[in-house]
Amino acid sequence: MYDAVMQWFSEGRNLGVNSSMMLSLIFFAASFVLIPRTFLCLGAGASFGLAAVLVILPSTMLGGILAFLAARYFFSERLHVYVDARPRLRRFATAVDEEGWRVVALLRFASPLPNAVQNYVFGLTRIGFWPFAITTFVFSIPQIMLYVYLGSAGRAVLLDESLSTLNRVVLGAGLVSIAIAALLIVRRVRSDADRAGLGADTEMA
Figure (spheres, rainbow, N blue to C red):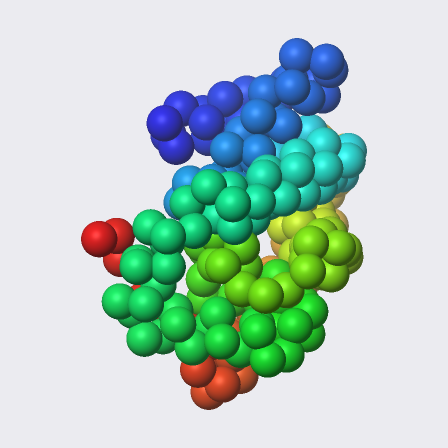
């Protein structure tokens, strides 16, 4: 499935009604299953440009809310058994109970936990619906915009025939610098999360 999605992205279609619906469905599904959202954002940016953000954000938000509610009201007992069997996941849920939206913000910005796993675990905590929803929306924006922008700019550097070789090199170096800076920030945030006991084992039972 993942290979098919990335091949579809690489065709560089216009962001029309049909492609918007497909893009929305993909990111909605990524809120429930372990699909690498970073690479999806890069692919969406390369195919559709920054306009893809306007589709990705609401579909990711809707998927995250539904996964959160499903974990809280429909699969709570089963998920509690899963989380309680994994001490690091249990510490993650406890930290959310104690610190509330601050931990949600930290982990939405950069986390060792996949997005789908976060959605389910947040649903098992005592955090309120609105703090969860608002924090998820606000602190997902920087990450999504960054990766969509990198995908869009990278495609422009490669395909814009009006650029000279020197301009390509300069722009390419700039993109690499941005990516490295973002990686260092993400690693620092994740390191802080790990030291706080917020890393997690994500293997399936």
